[in-house]
Image (cartoon, rainbow, N blue to C red; front, side, top):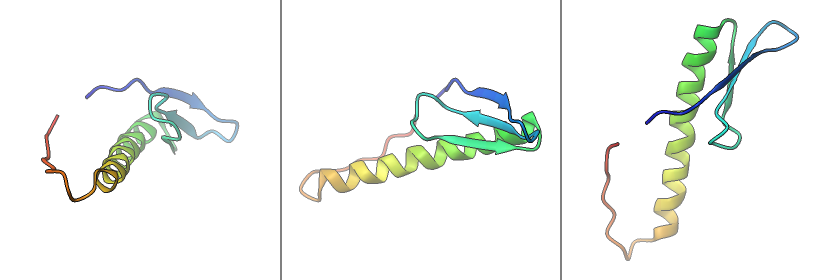
Length: 69
């Protein structure tokens, strides 16, 4: 999957990376490269957490199958 990420330098010099498509998915780094690496990890964690919520909401009465994208 491909996500658009905004990258902005904060007043303290750190780079803040945010994924607008995923509410609350924000990270930072000392430079652009670190910020982008960190936001990739944040996106993975955000998607995993949403998947876990969906799995619990589906309950055990439905068959659940994992699909890689």
